[in-house]
Image 1: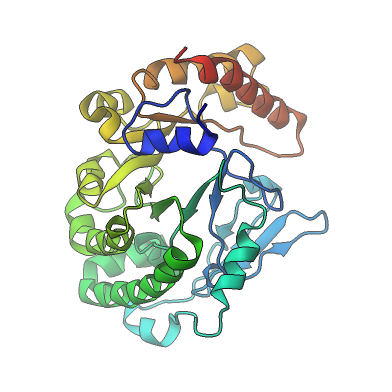
Image 2: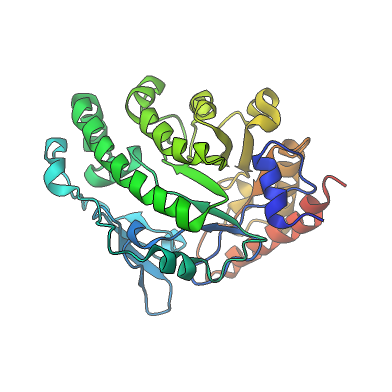
Length: 340
């Protein structure tokens, strides 16, 4: 029988899995079992701050952007509103400073990060990227988008500087962590459409996504794209740079049409309506369970699909816990037997 990792990677590699895989990312402090583990090398983020109950409270990232987390965000971190570190893109050289790397004991860092990861069962996702979203985090959406329109040359020089650092970091991650998959991560879309035109993406951002992907592509490591929102207009661009799976493919995209067009060549991870009735407060059990079955029925036929369904809300609220339990139970009983 396949391991969880082998079954997941079958989908990533365009092959038919034995059961519908499920993407599961470990909670802070909890070891991943049959899950997706993210490489958390030292330079990526500052040390995570914890609240009095041991839950994540925020951190400052490697570029200097401050993030906060709370119960209201399900302890996921968001940039502090209105607290921007760059007010004029022309001044980025004075503000944006990449971390220094030479004093890091990479062998020890990898050993520490991976000591609770079962590499036989767990898909290790490694690598660092991100261009579009970091600039918005540096400047705010209005100023960041304006800079892309008004000062594209400055944007490209900043991106080149960021890429030089990512390349150094990704080379170390590739050498010492040997990840099973590389994830390009850049949220460049809203629920309605892209933040910028496809042409602007192709001119400013795609060259750097492709350059980051090349390092892993040349090493034979499969590539995922993490991009929330309605971003289906960029699928062909992603495929050109070697992407074989999109996470989280969300319901504002034509997921059925995408599956029909690409089949297993371009897999979809997600497809669960996380803002729909199954995640409404006090959603009935049958509504939640039916949403899981509908998602799997619609997207899992003939492979090319990874289920990613979650319950969002106050993690201390029994309603949130109940929905999470129903999702898991229905996946276990339905998704893991779907191909039988």
